[in-house]
Length: 228
Image 1 (cartoon, rainbow, N blue to C red):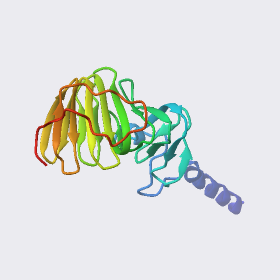
Image 2 (spheres, rainbow, N blue to C red):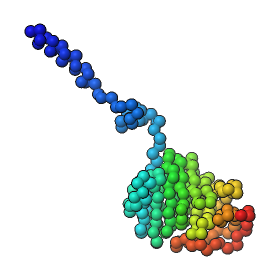
Image 3 (cartoon, helix red, strand yellow):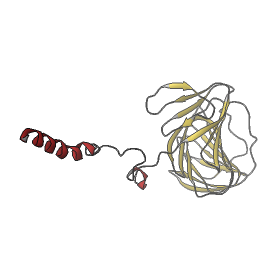
């Protein structure tokens, strides 16, 4: 009888310990849906979306380096590279107000995709960045020698030629152009040329927009603004 009572007491004492959920080890990530995860302390994980694909378009994943064929509506995440082949085009939407279009033979890297903070680096080719409506997003499009920051609604074309020179055209809107020579404020209908020596020039005529692959032909009637 005494043994039976002792056994029952041991079982009752063990039940509370069994009913408790196991605790994760210190330093492990919070489970999905937990208060810690929803507190807003976790870093932003921005994702853009491939909205248009025409022709041979590829994505080089930033985490693995794997090259995969682009798929419509597929996500683009930080450090991914988007590459268009000959005659191909692509479009990426960041949010309801900002999007970028890639011309043929273009390669871009998405170096930052946080909430309302977008940084795109152009390795080669031509892109058109469109701000469809004014927003509080901070956008920066970089080439090997200049950075472009759109300031309001507009259309911004950035070209990186095979020889390393860059051309920035504000077809509509307003932008700041940053380089080691300083800052240029560019209004609609203006262009800025940055050479390998960071010589910045501007023209008042609106350049024609080519639909073919970028070439190294320099625009005419340029007026030099700063020596290289």
